[in-house]
View (cartoon, rainbow, N blue to C red):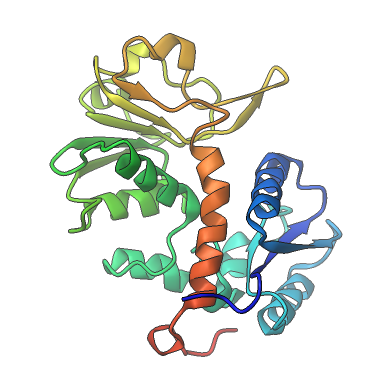
Amino acid sequence: MSLKKPPVLGIIKVGECSDALFYQRGIERTAKKTGVEYVIREFPEKIGQEDFLKEIQKINRNKKIDGYIVLLPLPSHISPEKVFEHISPNKDAEGMTPYNLGKILLGEPVVIPPTPLAVLEIFEKYEIPVKSKNVVIIGRSKEVGMPLANLLMLKKEYGNATVTVCHSKTKEIKKITKKADILIAAMGKALFVKRDFIKKGAVVIDVGINLYKGKIVGDVDFEDVKSKAGAITPVPGGVGVITSHLILKNLIKICEKDSGRWQKAAYR
């Protein structure tokens, strides 16, 4: 299906949101290369939650914006969960509304969050088999760890894995990660994963983006791990680069959608 006009992505930010600046710039660069248009809507850090939710409703009704994302983290007085509840599923370019996350749990993905989708794309592009493999994910965030775990367990061409999710309360984490055929680091802790976390030949996917001593680094100590891993993604230049492309892929999917197959229930 060809689009009649370039799709328009909304980038919504509250305050300076410095932690998301790297992510935002990557999306902007990719949009410029692909011809996708984008608009940035900035709101003051002191905006109240109810006022911000009203602005989200206005964006839902704005016909000039085809889909949008809300940059995280938000100020502490604004609940991300409340914000995602108010985003129209039909404009959810990050797949973070309860509807889109719920469809993953039901085994019927519609819009997949871009970072989990980036991991699936890496597996496909580099022909990394997932079926029947032991996959360990470190991190249980709603944006990455939880949706990715559910996707990898689905009865799909990219699924059928045996998945273990580790987190801050996991005991003896190295004993678990060393059994992984595929280790996915997504906890947001700089250089956390060392070579003694993995078995020789394991595939290591680093989802983390951290500012460490003035440099962007991942959750995996790349230099320490690379000689032991069978394959490993770098940071920067790995998952993050693909993620910005997949935001736009989701946007185009939204524009091409068959409205008859999408949720029509009212949202707040």
